[in-house]
Image 1 (cartoon, one colour):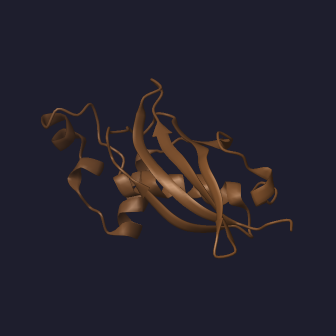
Image 2: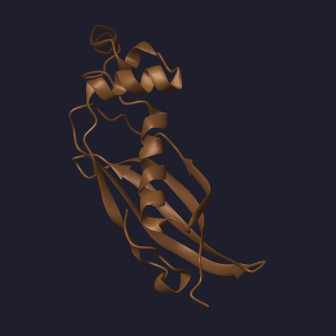
Length: 143
């Protein structure tokens, strides 16, 4: 985990440090067991290819978890992830690098809380956003 980020350290447009993931088929099996999502598209290559996919595909909620890790790694122990949402727009494949990225879009103080809104997304090796989303965090203040 990175050093603690404070509200005063953040400006609109600031890029969140990238998180690189290399999901494997083994990780998909583990995620299925932990999440209860046993949809065959995530482990049966024959089914996936019969439906027009090049291989099995990553679970959407696994990609959402990666985005959650992107944010919680960045905000540090004293930060609080208030809300995370994302949309599954494209499929990602195991064995391909997945880059989680984000940037600060807004910051403000409300009810004595130091709130930061972020745009977040996953990006495939072709540079396409596959899972865009947003996050709202509360950061500690130096004051």
